[in-house]
Length: 411
Image (cartoon, rainbow, N blue to C red; front, side):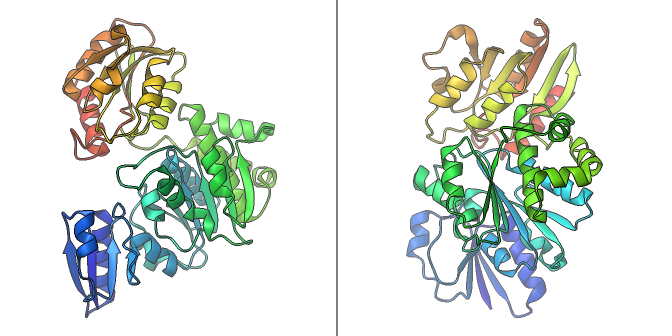
């Protein structure tokens, strides 16, 4: 067997390890640093299987797979898949925590967990997989998860997808192949979330609920992580788990209230997702480096309605329309100052009130400036929430967040 890996990131390395451990006669070739045009012109006739890394567009070859598609075709367990532009990791973590708290053999995979292929040998029909699914992972999927969760959908990854419609259509595969035996949970206040849900033949469950029971309100109020967006994600998770058990949400809560509350209370947030770092001289520092789009930044600012926010924003210019993110920043009533960095800083500042922003060349300069300003204010928060990718200044959002925390903890 001869395999070609197009890309050699986390998933590519996991695929190499998996096939080498399962096949003695396998030969694996690796191709990195290529253009889309070069891929179209290559001869693939020598390969039995071709695996694309997540951000490589489909080539539409008969023997072509993504790691996600291969996993779906070989997984013996039911899958709960979660997609959306923001909140995927948090929602998946809530679902995993709830299922584990109820005694299930639950596995968290995808961008938030580990490459799905790594757990394939551990899975049994009685296991359950919670899969965080980006548009890249859904791109060529021909089988939908048993339970699909569709969060808010906003523009993202348009530098890779062929326009917004292609991005939404890719995400739509989470619902497109569902049957009457499946279920979909969707955010009811987003046109594209509804559009995707309408592709599903399964049972439909909309959230957030207009009328919440007192017990549901108590569960959502028990969260330790700040922000209404986390309550929304927890509600979606609870509905998804109820759908998994094929019971009503009220029955799930009535039968398992104490276990559910313990699971939700135990969740303290994900690294670099509005993560509390330190309190110094009365100022709280939060790391939201995972924020790579305007919805995430908007949610982060709204998480501190009663605080004076000193925001550090900006990053890689991916050619997106920055009007929504500019509005999210400069219309926020709790914004005291925006310290702008990265390739997008001048575009974000363009035509805005100079009293509302400062431009800085490095993250360190931005953090030091935010510290000085915040310590002269009351009830202050320094919030790193870039609303942009990190690749102009850092390897990834982990490195950006780690650097922010290193600076803050060094004060």
